[in-house]
Every structure is written in C-alpha cells, then in structure tokens.
Amino acid sequence: MADYRKMWEDLNMDVDTHDILCEVLPVAFGDVFLSQENRPESMDYFNMVVAEIHGIRPAELIEFQKKGGKVVGSFCIHVPDEVVVAAGAIATGLCSGSQFWVPGGEKVLPTSTCPLIKASLGARFDRTCPFFRIADLFVGETTCDGKKKAWEILAKDAPMYIMDIPQMKREKDFVKWKEEIKGYMAELEKLTGNKITEKSLKNAIVTLNNKRKALKRLNSFRKLDNVPISGRDVLLITQIAFYDDPVRFTAQVNRLCDELEERAKNNVSVFNKGTKRILLTGTPLSIPNWKIHQIVENIGGMIVCEEMCTGNRYSEHLVDENGNTIDEMVENLTRRYLGSINCACFTPNTERVEDIIRLVKEYNIDGVIDVNLKFCTLYDTEGTIVEKALKEAKIPVLGIETDYTDSDSEQLKTRIGAFIEMLS
Ligand code: BJ8
Image 1 (cartoon, rainbow, N blue to C red):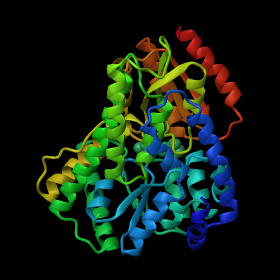
Image 2 (image 1 turned 135 degrees about the vertical axis):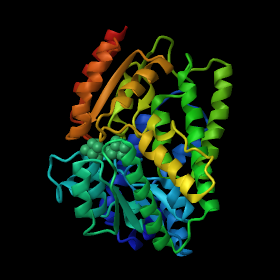
Image 3 (image 1 turned 60 degrees about the horizontal axis):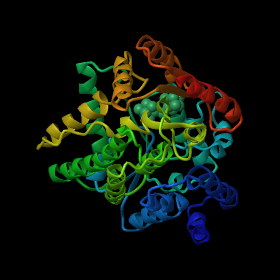
C-alpha cells in the first residue's frame, strides 16, 4: 500500500488518518474471508482487488482522468450506469459500509441518520476515501429523506447532480423517470463532451447486461444442494461489482463460475450437509460491511440469497437489448431501472414481498433474516409488512436492526444462533 501514498497526497487526502483504515481493513478481511476453508481458487482476483481497494482501481481512474476521461460516482442502483458508459465515462459506486467514516458524517448530519449516509458523507468530508476525492460528478437520488437532505450538504463540497426518482410505479411515473434519464444523459454529455450515440448506448447496455449475466450465473450455484461457494464470498464479489471495471470483472466472475461448475459436478460444497439455508433481505450491505454474513456463517448457517441492492436486485433483471433507437433504448432502461427494482421507497411495494417468497422457493430457503440499518425508516416500516407476509406464508423470519459497529455482535450471535437452532 505504501506505493500509493503519493497518489493519496496528490488527492489531498488525510493520509495519516487513512493509514489507520489501511491497518485495520486487512485484519478484518483476513478474519472474515481468508480464514475460510476450501475457498475456490479463483477468489484470488477478488482478494487482490480488495487488498488494494484504495490503490489499484483509484490509480486506474486517475490514469483515465489524465487522458481526459471523467469519473461519475453514484449511491443507488436506480441510477443507470449504462448512460455513464455510453458517454465514455467510468461509473463507480460510492456507498460506504464502514464505521470508520461514521463519526465524520455525524459532524455534518444528525446522529439519527442511517450509517450508510453518515459514512458516505464522512468519507468525503474527512478526506479518507480516494473514490470520494476522484469523482468528477456525484449523482444523488431522492429515494429517502436522509439522502435528499444529505445531498444538499454534500453539494456544498462536491459537484452534484440529482435524479428525482418517482415514489410510485404508475404509467405517468415511468414517463417522468424516462425524462429523468434523458436529463442525466444530457448532463453526462455536457460533462464529458461526448455525444451518446445509438451505438455507444447499445454497447453499454450489452456490457452491463453481461456483468449481470455473470452474477446471475454465480448466484445460480447457490441454488444447489451442495453449495460450492460461501455467502460471504458472493457478497464480496457483488460489492466489488460496484466499482471494478465491468468487462474485466465479468471475465473474472465467469472464470470463477467455470471453477464452480467443476465443483458442482463433483458435489463439492463449502458447507456441511444439513446447514440451514438463509435468505437475507433489507437494507444494502456496502463494502466493507460483512457483519451479518460472518455471524450467520460462523455459527452454522449459510446465506444463499440476498434480496437486497447488494444482491439479487442488482443483477436479476436485464435491460431489454432489443431497442435500436435512442428513444427505444431509454424506454428499456426506464422499464428496468424503475419497474424491476423493488426498493422500500415505493408505495405500494408488494412486488418486494412477492420477490422474497419466490426466492425462498427458488433457493430452497429454511429461514429469512430481515436486516435493517439503524435509522432507516423506510425498510424498518416495510419490515413489519414483510415479516407479517412471511409468517402468513409459514416462512420462518427473524427481524434485526443493526449498524456498522460491533457493539451488538454478541447479542446478534445469540439471536441468530437461536433462530438457526429453531429452524432445525
Ligand atoms: S434502491 S435500497 S440503493 S435507495 S439504508 S440510505 S434507504 S435510510 S440505501 Fe438504497 Fe437505492 Fe433503495 Fe437500493 Fe436511505 Fe435506508 Fe439509509 Fe438506504
């Protein structure tokens, strides 16, 4: 990591404080990931990407900028990366998942804000994350109240663009979202100086669909009786999907899937027979938030599906590739980015409950854990609806609320342990 010090200084980062993060992250990574037995060898690429998380990719982005390229950071899976790629820019996710950044966020936000928002603003204002220094444009959305207000604060320090997401899915909401996407396209054309053409947009749709297809392929192995990869490894890969180069990432996921295919043929599993199969639903798990996966899999369960933005929701639905004109392609993006994502910001959001029940069947789930990030009113409130529906469908469910600290780890181990015990 020492090699990157100059790069971080040039980015005007607080390098001394950042050093503390560089010391703790490898230890946490070793505990959660490297301690696992019988990991697929093709995880080596993803290990390397995370080991150098603030080095390799930021250095690539800076190189790209030196050649005149632009980097666009976003916080939500409603924001279409295709548009960024079509404009010749690079898209990167910016949601932050570490307690390390939360106190910095609390300097500018109320304590009663969800940790994801606090950590994201903390990463920017404390100058301890290179991605937050590099981005030429920050793209926010109006999904929840906390984010809406946070963007106003972030805008004082960073160039921001806001997409106004409808809160319902009526036909007029699709019309509005299509206009929002067109507005975003115009903004990116202005930023990059590049025109989005039919060809560039089509290529971008195919590129990002290929990434989704690879992730779908990866998730399909988790439906098997003998699951050849741990839940925490798949979570890590999904988190990396948000910031890695999409073409290289896709190739690496497919390489891993080839290895998993061999494992599947030989009935190799990383879990003991009879291990209870858990589906996680709820708020996203941004990197490096690995807490729940570590707890569940260390106490004898296995996570085989995440009905989350850092899970199934990110990759399950492709963009229709049949459009040829810009308008047709934007229409297809609109349908996919509004219609297929069942975030708790929508009312009603019955499709999310239907998704969970469908996934319970597809992944042969024994129990569901509904995990809510503290102070997320949207998912907390919807949790009541989700849990009631699951109970009515006779699907065991446990609702938990947590944050990025370890202060509740022991309590969570007890509760999740009792839940998994009950499934037996
Ligand atoms: S599509 S889940 S990525 S908004 S946890 S910041 S909702 S208070 S992250 Fe999300 Fe897009 Fe929806 Fe997905 Fe607010 Fe809740 Fe915090 Fe949240």
